[in-house]
Image 1 (spheres, rainbow, N blue to C red):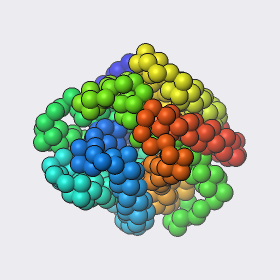
Image 2 (image 1 turned 30 degrees about the vertical axis):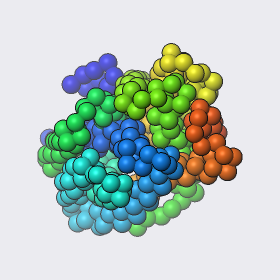
Image 3 (image 1 turned 135 degrees about the vertical axis):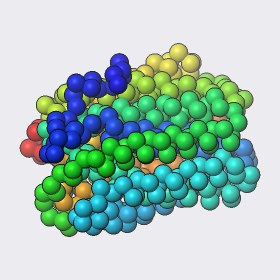
Image 4 (image 1 turned 180 degrees about the vertical axis):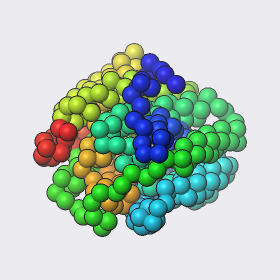
Length: 414
């Protein structure tokens, strides 16, 4: 499969022992299904369903529910990561975790879209976070499990590209499939299908030798990578979480259905352009200093946030979305490639579980911090609230990319 937006298939991983070929595309397919679910829920459905079921205080209710879900994900991912590393040392390919997470996630998706009260919605969302993170922690170790070191940048570009495509598919589905049950079936089917395809491919591949200690060691570079990634992702989730409110209150799409559709179009544009950014970053992430690649991507995201803050028309918002998506795609590739170099190979899933807390915890921090600021200065509601949120996102992203340069060059330039 080739696409303008995806890395070329000529960049496949070489043949591994036993004649099997590790295909970065097929290994990354499950990420498409997972990210389609998050693209639908975190970008559109969680906010719109909260507005439907907690209309009197939707912004505050959204922040609290997002915080509870992310906290659940953090705990599950670390515990399951440690468990899956132990099983990998005994020869497991971790596929049992992929399958359990996908099946449980599919059931929770149906419950989320069928919820008739805010309490039921909350239970379903927390269950979905728990189920999917049973798979996500072990799954994020799939590149070092099956792909040789020289091709990590290319494999990371496939993960980033299919993450963007998955987010676009999810946002598109949530924006334009009006029937909640149909939407839940579509997302669940995609999740299960991509899990099956990735699992079938991984089942045929030999595991790469795990080099390094089997116990997790948290080094200074690990800490610096974590802090940098967390700060950048706080900025990302602030933008994602308050985009619908921006569309409603700044762009003037006051009818919820119209705001949901327009937000979906912006997210789809962001993720499609993000896939292009991921493709462009594939070779530089294999050959150049990955800190520089990540910085260039983050700069695009920062410029886009400044545009969002200053514009109040749809054309300006579209331009900001395109710049943000391109920069974010570049950043994602470098982010994955750096992690595969810095994290300990002998305890990769547990390390990835902790590393991914830099994505999960921002889902807690972003709404909690923004809600605290908006409440403290009595800015809830109106066009100023999303602009303040995006200002916070800009500052958080700048801090994160500055922190990245604490990493030694020897770890990011090979």
